[in-house]
Image 1 (cartoon, rainbow, N blue to C red):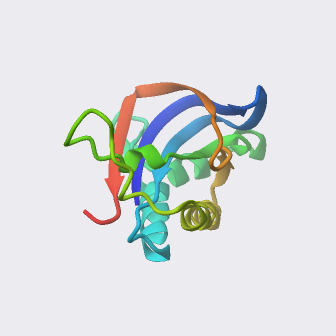
Image 2: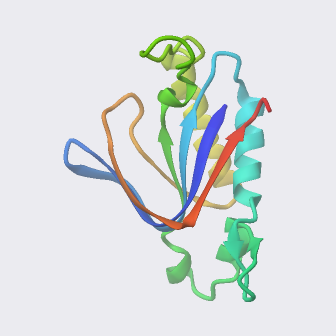
Amino acid sequence: MKAVVQRVIGASVRVDGGLRGSIDSGLLVYLGVALEDDRSDADWLAEKIGNLRIFEDAEGKMNLSLKDLIQGLSSGRERASIGVLAVSQFTLLGDARKGRRPSWGRAAPPEKAKRLYEYFMGRIREEGLLCESGEFQTHMKVTYTNDGPVTILLDSRE
């Protein structure tokens, strides 16, 4: 499983003009599911993402995870829209080494990819985090403000 994780201030996804999911701040995660992926890949990524220390502490060091950040907030209202926006993106598995058109041969078939995408989102929620989403196998419009910018690439197989 591959993930592009971006620290964001505000992120949303729209489908056919309607709002599908949004967060005020947290992490935007583009998720690609490969042929060989299984639940253990989703488990590893969900745990890694929930505990990835890429938020600044009081001294300005990237020393806090999303979970730490949320626990440090005083009211439930402040916590309400801080979390993960998960967007499925098979194009992360594109291989463009040959020719000009990427090959999607490493991407999992849609049924398997959807099942693992949904499982991943469930695991994010089990980590105690809000998880909003895009809509699987649909043309989406994603809007966000990258904070930092901070962008981390994760691969459960590397």
